[in-house]
Image (cartoon, rainbow, N blue to C red; front, side, top):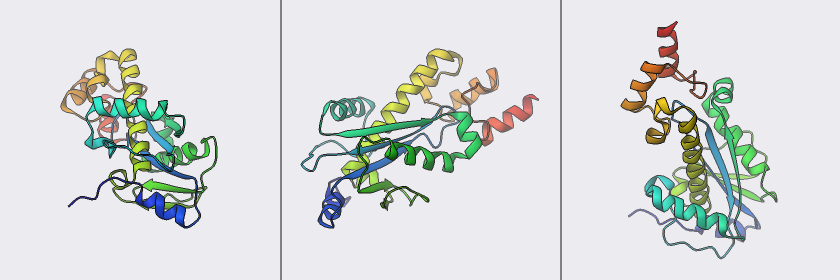
Length: 208
């Protein structure tokens, strides 16, 4: 039976003396266009939520609802950082994701005592960390960060859709869908496409 998303990890850390705990997650590692977004969220000790879990398991409508609830809660602290396609191309996607995570935590209004990170450890990192594979379905702090990162990125892709309507970013959010690839072949890459990603770089070479 799948473990329920909870504050169990946060409770354990507080029992060890880490009082201010941030959850960190990212959205947008896989797409061919747009930014990678990382969020850091610090939940209050008495936080509860019956629906919050890994953002990928939530409907877009539920993600938006939870996002608005989190941001409206004065006891919830959050920070979001987006790294654009040129920076992803310069750093590579893994390093860009880690850099976004570091910046998100550093931009919190108060530094955390410990950080719960979805996935594998991030090295180097400015704070003590616990990495949890599948953590966005285990820790409410990470789940909250996953929702904030995902909704933020989706909204950024809607804004890019208005600038580059020929790519239909609103429909696929930059992922390599059949529609996206068809539009890429038709129009070539835009300034927000990740030219270091295989499908885009191959297309650039074919067009040269």
